Length: 122
Image (cartoon, rainbow, N blue to C red; front, side, top):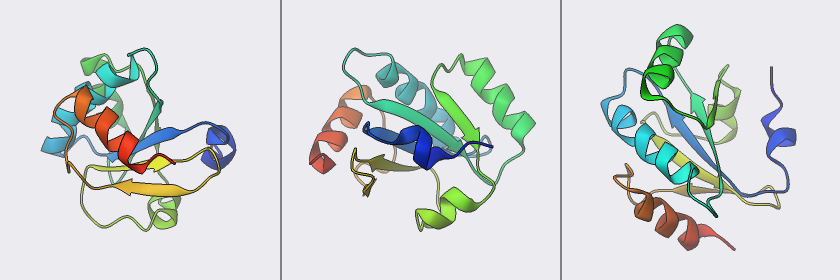
């Protein structure tokens, strides 16, 4: 068990909710990983939701993903008031406030991630 609130405090963090069975998630995960490996990127954390943890781990391992990802017990989705669609991205600000990123719905390249983060950064 990880207390994400404590783990993410003080530093901007892009949280991405995903599942291994979600086609758009499978396309977006490598883009998030590429962004996470760029100098100056904000921390990226994946939250696997409504999924089989073994299938999720196999997907991340197969893709060679390096950013941290955790399995949600249901609490993260509730706290974020996340709609029942995937993928979803949120930016946790250093002050603990959370902004949902809605445009684009699915990231196609790291430039889109940088632009989306700059739009919601305070």
